[in-house]
Length: 116
Image 1 (cartoon, rainbow, N blue to C red):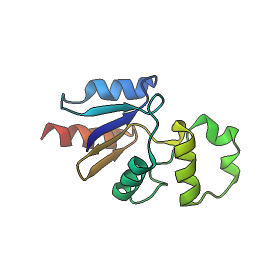
Image 2: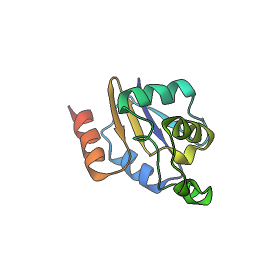
Image 3: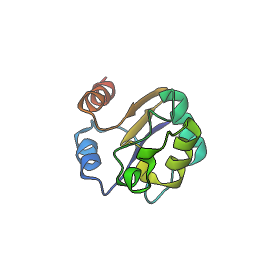
Image 4: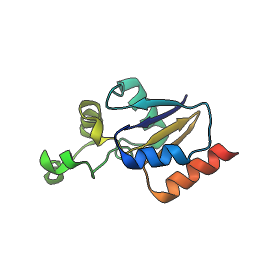
């Protein structure tokens, strides 16, 4: 798989996508095309946990009171599948490699990987 899961209305995702070297990567806007359970399980396999994919920065994290709960891996999986904003974005899956989120080091690693 060579795919980037992103949110088209997110200016950070837009900036990152613009800065990426041009490759034949499939883009999936997670708002208009929901993540499937199979896709999420593949991401979890590469990332090692659902927690690595789960965004606690989502506005709904506090609004839904999740900050006051201890979430299990299954809880995080369910929330990501129910609400796209709980996925750290962007997530790039390229063969057996995964790059999660918009932290500078992750974006630089993705750009370096695609540049080779």
